[in-house]
Length: 346
Image 1: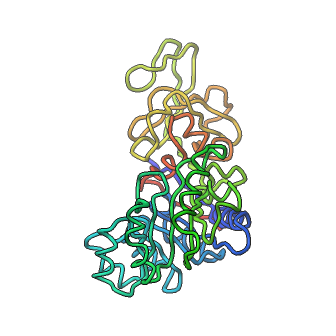
Image 2: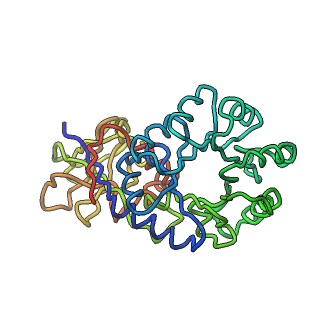
Image 3: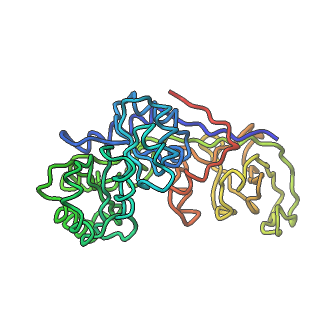
């Protein structure tokens, strides 16, 4: 059938990390978030490119991801596990020198009992109500925790993509109230928080979606291109339909290309009949429904049958496609499946 190709520009990835690092300013470390297989792009190669660019601290979601990352980057980088210390994680945490961000009293108890003296951080809930200790819980255990010398105190902003949202300052104030004056490094900002300015930077920022070319970091260089091979082209007469459910009918004679990609590759059906594919800089509209393995595209206006068409490229970014699909760039990136042939540049 032919396999779609996911082109991944590691130079652009590294450049985006450097750009966010410059925005975070002197005195603030820029860690790299490489959870979910580096947002779908391949953990090992992405992490090594970022390490070469200067990143020496990383965040993953789970201990299992931390093990894979440690094997990729070696013994020296600091690796934080955002999901904390879960039951069954102890050996991985110890063997791979992973640093859990402890999110609850239960996790604090587990870590202190299983790995006394081992590194850890604390995640505090500053108002997002998703993960972390509530202020009252933190008050109860703060003295005990600080005696154990945590690596980091962190929280997470709920509305950083909206610079004027009052929740940002509300959370910053809450985070400061819980952490001011404590002799420990602090982290509040991910990509959106970096862009909010120095008041949000503290000691460590966590570069995530912006590294991978996504909003809200508008200056980011594109990192991914999805190239889909054309399997077949056919002429369709006026009045004939294309694809499942007869959702598209040719109003005039048309030429339709069928490309090798579909929702089995993480390309959501929600872009059916709405998105474009590109032959170089020329847009070609999707027609009919996206199916599991195939997408049909109107190429009537081209004077040739292209060998392939691009779905993600400089002319239709992850955020463009996300807007069409009614989702966010994070979901577009992390949905890109295993069937792609991944080709790395740089």
